[in-house]
Length: 434
Image: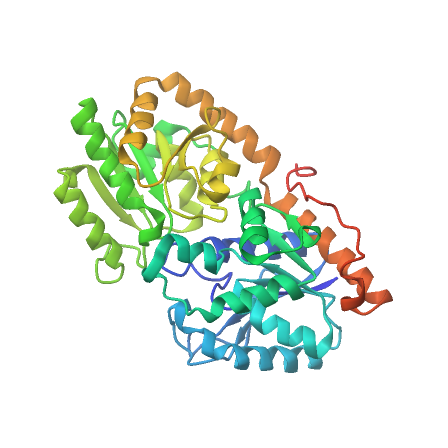
């Protein structure tokens, strides 16, 4: 098949860890690679955000097309909606000029979906949509701090109604689509995110700590990912304080991520806020901001930690818990969204309420006092990651969905067969992974 992956703000070539560079970038990059390895032709379309970018870049055989839409500079994703007509017009022209027609489009995020709907109307190409976050659910959790306009909701309504298939990343994502968007369950496919076994594997803790220059005998908590308020990193900082005051125990918290390789409060304002909280809580000396790190280095951070913690308010899936599990590290995660799906409570780690540092501190202390329990949880997480959450399995599940849509389009217009297609109700991403 010839497949178009559309990801308007999240390029697979970007370095993850910045404000608008995280799970979606990783998802698109890995899905593209897996589809390519399976023999498909894959193009990724992302907005041109630098003036000197070529029209087309090569990513190990995947073409990345930098779409001229809006000014060629980095902009917050909340400011990109006005440029989606231009984005769509480019796609339609580009698709028409290609010698081989695209069999399917896979839109990532609602703005990519908006552009893809215009392409679908013009050219009749089947559309799969993964939202990665839902506007109505996000608004429930973020309130006035949500920077997207209300018109996002109507766009998402249209996408849910008009996409040929909607990919939910976990059961909670599926439930949210049905509850808040009246989605037809027959057109929802659950396909989780994954990890790359070449990137993420266990490294001996002593070896990893030596490589990072970390103390061998400290109890170390790791937080890794985008540094934005909804990720709940302040909750982790406060839990270190509770651990110190209520349990008379010390922990070192390393925070990896940001918009620069060195921790910089101007480049990443969230660092300044978190440092202020750490100071107020009396644990400034126990919290270290590392800055952004490349993917090849992350397995050392995961492996060096005694526990990985992530307690966002809202998380459609969350790739970092799976990466930590793939490195044999126990995970304490917020009991929300995809984390509730990936972390087996009491088996691979613990689930705790978001915004509850006391509950988090109780679990931290339990793992601190019981290293054998932590080891067993890490081993269980490693096994679960390979069984359920490999990118190979994700790619196979998506390719199956694409192929069924492409075959249906060969025999009838997409609109006529949407309700008649027989697809697997649930795509098990790890079912055939190695």
